[in-house]
Image (tube, rainbow, N blue to C red; front, side, top):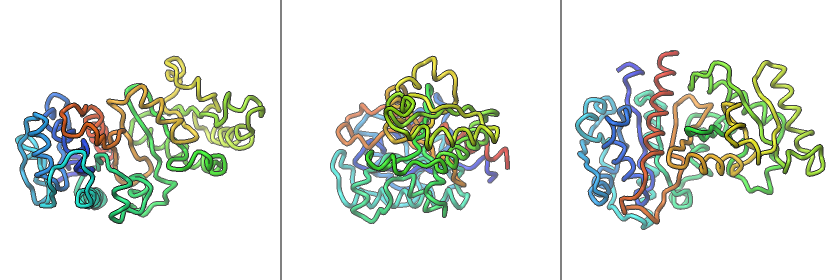
Length: 337
């Protein structure tokens, strides 16, 4: 198969969460939402039972090789392998966490080997996975390790119809953020973001806007000096290289409709500074995409939602958006290669 015709690999996520049902719902809308072919690594019984309990029309076809997925996809949801578990929505079990980790590891290996065009990961419970040997803070760091890249090279971007935002520091306590921020970190990750917007998103001249860390972006040092000491020098150096980057801006004003029209991505200083506006604007269509890796990886930008799993009310919009974005990124990479 050519790279352009390869299917996406989808990991199951925690089988007790909404991952199985939103995967099933996405497949059921494959034609109306123009979803590229994909297969799931394990959990055929979980997905089938979840779909039935949620009233989602679904056929499942077990496959033994990824290349069988595109043909099967039109008539059934392809599931690779025999790994499975009982369907117990909302009930966190060690066996379920083991299945989630197995599915993630398998799907990642297939994307790295080139047998899948990209990877889409359903939501996991990090705490449950930690109990069965998951050593990373999250899936972004897991993928960096799996791809043999430094973790700082794996850049999390949240993307929706209204906003793209990148947290420059991710899974850290808020009290640690000021000490983690350096001009070098900002420059390094800004370069990765700009390259990805060009190569994976087809934006010829990306516009990056940078948040300040402190209220009012420090207000000339009255509320903190990180803007003058760390952030502004990094921006100045990147502008001297020819990058279309501006700031630092007060974060409370950077996400208004008028402000958003002036940039392609916002660079935030910490996790919630990026995720709060993205989720407020685009929760049902938000995608977590990892930049800077040799593989394509996206994920719906929401959690496992154990409290509503199995009730048939989970919105598959973010999973559909993640599948479509992964397909578009993979197609651009294939065309470039």
